Length: 290
Length: 290
Image (cartoon, rainbow over all chains, first blue to last red):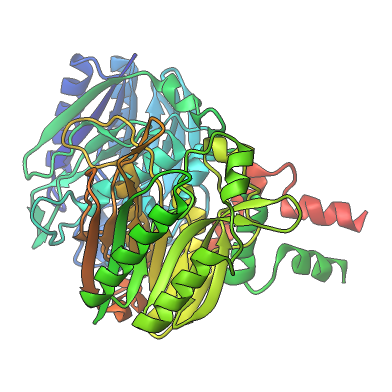
């Protein structure tokens, strides 16, 4: 069994030292509670609701900056895998909404959010690489960020790349929902876990920031799609913990004759390219053939 | 506003006359309650839990057989759109798990289930066409059947083809779930509705048949993913009804800068073919180039 934690944090835009300390405390508590894989929210050190591009730029760091170095040190000292989101200063003038995976003092992957939410489109450059999946001491760990989760194509890619667990830093803005209903962000995570038979851990923000309120919907979901811990759906800081058998995610069979990945009808999904891009593959080949 | 109904029926394998009468009664009740679009379960006239191929074959009908003719007549007489599932006798020795869309006495589409569940693989030929979307008097209506819904690629195709509402005949076998949790079949429908911003109507079986129990999870879900009627999650027959504004499904925007279909990163999903087939497109083109 592997101990998994999602750290739901209350953060404030621009208060980097405070945010970093909150993350550190949560990581240490999670590790002392037995967690070997620890997930933090999106844009943890910087906060989220930037006034503008300039403010985001002033708060940006590189994947070897002070926040990353702290997570690197913590991952070595505590012997854990840490996944967290941060505002990345990239080449030239670029900013990315990124996540890093640290294992035992090593930077295993940096991922740049590919599907940007609302005002993020005015600040960040979208990533152009698929979600990374890293073979770690605790299992195969994939990552993506928040709105990325709303694209079943993207969660499918992580599953196809072999993710046992998808670790997702999120900052889910709170929207109205009918009484008694779960946040739709959580429902989509449940569905993505079940159709791919992988674990998903979402670590969300809580509280408010410059009139943006957060769902506080952190959750750990099993390959059947049911929550093992959470969803919190509340405004308080909380470490969720679950002990999971990651190997469950390697069995994609759901009946004597069914397998969630093998049952895909790739021959028919090609219709997608016909419907959605200007050329089918064959047309593209013909073009290359001249 | 358009009146939509899902007819959750108790059916019995082999009792075609009884099953057909139950469907007829439910259609008439739904129409008299104001429904203009009426959805029936999968394999309505035949029942589901066939002993073998021979039993299914004996219960199979063509899309101009007696059940289809009755639904055709009812759609004309009541002025409604009817979507229902039946066991289709196809060319040669083939059997299909099919659905028909009838509008005002016209057969608008026949769809053959493309993703077959468990023992169905031993009886039916899988369909080889994408889910149809038909422009009807009440809006653009797509259809697919039961396990098809578990493939986000497939529900996406219906949305891309312009479905305002996806009408899904289902026979969801009952599986254990944690106390207080919704059936995962319903959760997946909610997620599919929300990531595509379309209505989904699932008409399920209820009761038991040859030791197979059904979820009885009929539900009508809005483009936010929240239920408008149901989920029933019970063993009793029930007509669900909702009055919906189908045009809501034509607005795919979810923030100032976001649109659930336009935000797809088609350039990056191409990675799917690299990951999932033996050759990348470029490699395939190279092969064609020789």
